[in-house]
Image 1 (cartoon, rainbow, N blue to C red):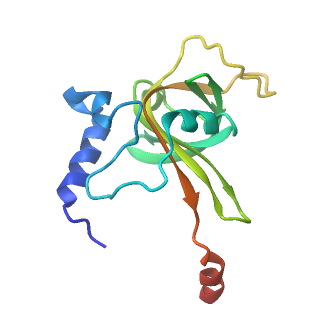
Image 2 (tube, one colour):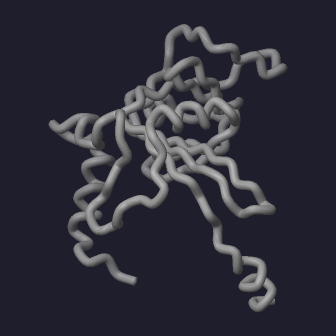
Length: 175
């Protein structure tokens, strides 16, 4: 299915990839609301910002999306939340600092019940910062600490999820 105006998506992607140019992070939208992209429709079952933060406090593993050597990467990460400060432990990977410091990144965490096929998903967009010293508890049981990055949150949004009830039937039919 082709987008109605592929130019809009291309411009949006280029602006994010280039650090959003003169508009800065504020062009992603207010930190207090959901992001809406042209042509993608309105989100369904949107949660309040406060509810998003509450739900993030209930799980500790999420996914970080960033660019490493000009390629998109999505990594599972352990994260720490203190109030509305978010720090991600990348473990003992060797991610170049330039991919992590002052870069536009996205983070997602969710919880889906496999029986009811429902749950929630929260997304965060912002700028990454490698803290010189951090106050988060990062004892992972290894002799040295893994890479830690904080997110300066520009937007946080979330929604309730109801997964496709027919996925098992579709999978069975394909095999």
